[in-house]
Length: 306
Image 1 (cartoon, rainbow, N blue to C red):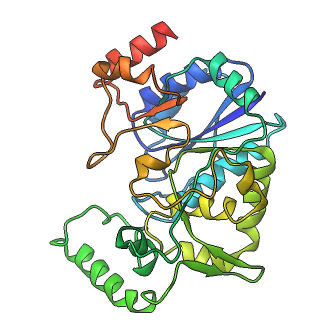
Image 2: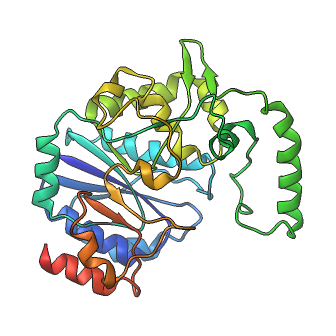
Image 3: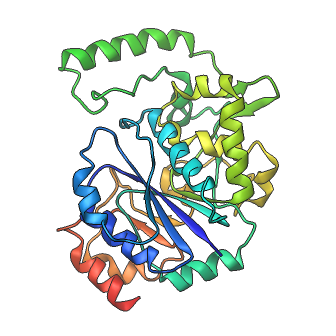
């Protein structure tokens, strides 16, 4: 059971190295790193030096909060791993501040026991009456810029907000179903961390290359990394291979976890040593989010016990 861990990174090189050392200690586990092109790669190269089966993607993209470039980065990871001669059975999409809460042997046993399953749940939001979901596609988003989290008092952010509001006139009538040349694709929503089989990964690779209308629509969605892959898989034959499918609409991202435990009262909670007892009881393989200097006690206990 060979597994490629695909890690979208932008910060905390020491944590990334710690996670890579844990996972890559198994000869069947490799990690691929996409480092945000806005970041200096030198500290990551230094921290990750000498770790076996650790690979950086040959190309990097500037990833902005909520922007479509995250999709480009995900595909950079997926395609780099697919091109390897390692012939992976599973591809696990991770994000920078994730960390395993199960041992490598437990992770491997999990994928062996569930071989053939896709771990990518999807909430159907096309045609929804819930504005929390509908606004994801009924408004026009322009997020691939450094002003996503800036205040509207910033003149550039204000201009982007005004232009986006004006362009939303063109999307308000959209019903949440993308009409491509081959078929219609009702939009699904879910978590940005997931795991898929090689067959599904190859399908995702081919899909992105052959569906320009789909890609064009996703570029103006809210948080496309929470919709792109979910929509593709849940409109394919792989849907019935998913851990769950045809689930009813349900609010809040925490209800759509795949293999990563996280808490999201207002923003994702940074986990610390006090969360240890709770975490080891979870069925998930990973947790989010942890930080060097804040979560060290938790990480020490996880590494020590596991």
